[in-house]
Length: 243
Image (cartoon, rainbow, N blue to C red; front, side):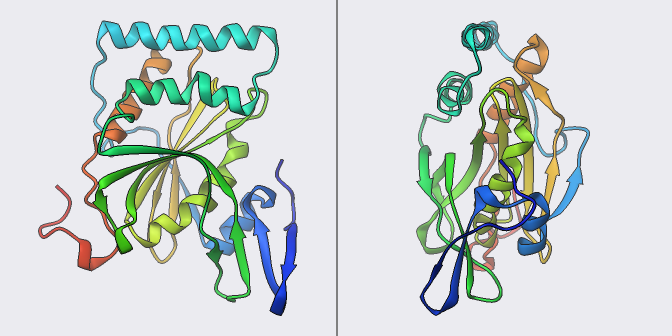
């Protein structure tokens, strides 16, 4: 649940302050990390969405039906949301295959703010990296960061944590994709580095309708197949730009 003010987790020696990302508001993140919001009414030209096979469409339908059966009984908690929807969709989209690797429920490195005495911490839900494309200090390229919520909470409630957790990756690479979801609804977010980092909210998609549900898989496949040649470190840039 978002708060309208900063909640200080605890104070460390020498007046060091730790802020947990889950206790920040959107205005907090925009102010502390400098994010600016943009909107996009289309996934192109960022992504090329390919047609799905009949098998893939059937699998998406099965994922929707499985989730719907849980939803019919009661609200679906965050852990089950991840198991029932984004993880099966990511398997279909190829995120389980090398060089992509998944990490679950891991602490982020502390984000140090300009005053050096304030840090943001937290734990992401799902992260996909491309181990074939290391960035700075051999840290793998972040491909997709996912924040899940209970089925009765709007996906927008996960945006603040998503922005905070993705922030440090923009020091190593030019962009990263994010996704917030409650199992039913999916909000993809495109984050870009810069003196003022930006995040673009992509068209809202739902698993509960056939065509939008298939588009969720199309978007995931397109993100997983992107050439990961966008390092923010000039020393790691590829001559001639991104291919």
